[in-house]
Length: 287
Image (cartoon, rainbow, N blue to C red; front, side, top):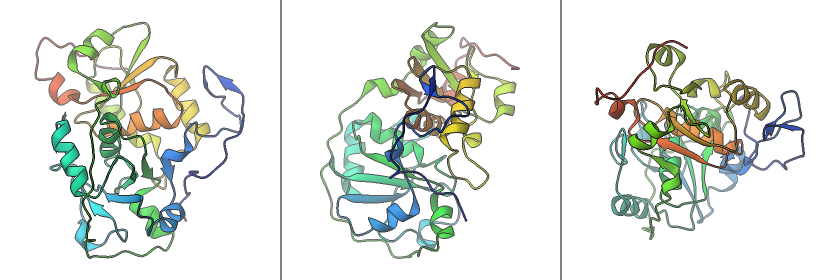
């Protein structure tokens, strides 16, 4: 059985080091509400204020079976493109068509523990939507809990979504250039370690997004995450910019940092796909 998230857990005080739960302490997520478990979703399937979003990236398709009532958002095509977020007007139109308004609680899931669905989470945050969450462990966790699937798409009542850009969630190429070796800004490479070793943006530290998940595909517990963030030398009081190859793993890293209490997190949406197009942009290899 998959370990479920701690969305409804009550936070407890614990010893801290540098703003993170101390390694070995009884650690809790700083923002447990952004990670919900299968039971939470099951309890809210008929809640009109909650919209479950199937944001998977791979086979099997949405039409083969999805969480009852979930709408589909194609994170490859409908969210525009890898490495470039769609404009505010287009995003607002898409969310409205999916029945998502400004007061809607959005829970996204995929088949990869949130590694892909996090792009929708980040896009919602960037466009001012506060109540965005991920299903811990994704569709596998739902199935492991013995929950049902359906194949029919729900009838969607359109909603009104007003996008309000939150620029602090976004980093452009020149923001990243300015952050290289900056004393109070950290850059995080969320790609697998072999990719980081091959090439990465100078001064970036490695925090592979897949390693933020446990063996079941659920998000690691706060104690393990705290140890990883501390080992990477990340400071929750400083601005942190995440990136990957195309805006997906970077979004999940941003999600985990937010979950763990980091206050100033942005994603470089252009990612390496944009960075490597310009020969003047520096890269490093090794560790």
